[in-house]
Length: 292
Length: 187
Image (cartoon, rainbow over all chains, first blue to last red; front, side, top):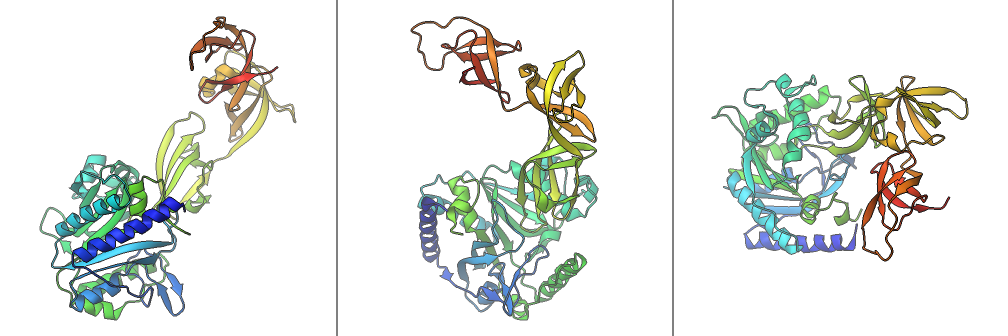
């Protein structure tokens, strides 16, 4: 923590709330203590009382979207166990927003706008120009491997599954080269999480993008899944993978699964605010902007 | 065996049958994937640096390495000979493994000798050594230009740049990592 970091955080929060108000978004505080904290295999929630601390406000906010509020956002604490490092903290501040009727490209525009106003709010240089590029192109530029046709052994010599091979090369050889502000889209379909999958091109892709600034992953966006049956199947498949790894299953949130089936076409995004402040300020970690 | 959670700067690990030390590490967790630890590893024998990424839960082999403080005795054509001052054991370290820092070695200097699987593989000098200047041009009176330097030869025969005011016969402190002059010392 340093006083300048704490001040930067306050200025940034004020500017972001003003931006959302100006753009017709409703701030919706949802519960931090929840019955079902996550769906994904590699999220490790913290148990608390009769439930869990949320790993993101996603399930609650989607119920609000399904209930007919088309533009909503939340800023608040989220908790992920086993994530500690210069760019991770078990408790961190998430900015998450959902916009009914939007395409991923609309959210890309909004990310660029919000990062620019956040930079302005803390007297940092607004990052740019932005690059928008597919995972496949970026991966091939860095490694020479074409993901659309590559097997796990083409990607990494370690004996492991396709996704582990992908991420090993991603964190070793691709991510360190993302120095320009970048929006990376069309992720492998096996990494869809709660996003729609599109299979009308050369390989199936998840309708997702991640935003990078200063080499740091700041945000993850989905064109949201709105099929309750598919949502239930993904819960089951993530829980199967967790069981194989000796991890407890995530409780399935029935109210959420039903709400997914009533959602209009929606794009949603989660952005790490500790990272946004640190990346814009040029810090080596998220620590100076936090009071731990 | 070490786990990824044990990774720290200075940890000695064996990769592909060679000993390495961790010089940098970072926890990374892609949004939708496994956590990894990204590392930079330095080969303890030849100094080459390697980038390696370990998946959470992967294990790393411990490198069988040990450090001993020893006194440098003398050099011959092939090796540097050093003695353990407690046991009086003498070892010969192949010259090719010592590298550039060898130019600062003087007899009776204390050095770290690294053993890998029981064999001496490198000699590591202290970060700073003190050596006598055996030759340099005389300092010019009145020349007070900031940062101006001149070449000087020290007792090992190596050259170092020193400020203009430094005289023949002066003892100086040298940073063996960079080869830079640090300051004059009294002897």
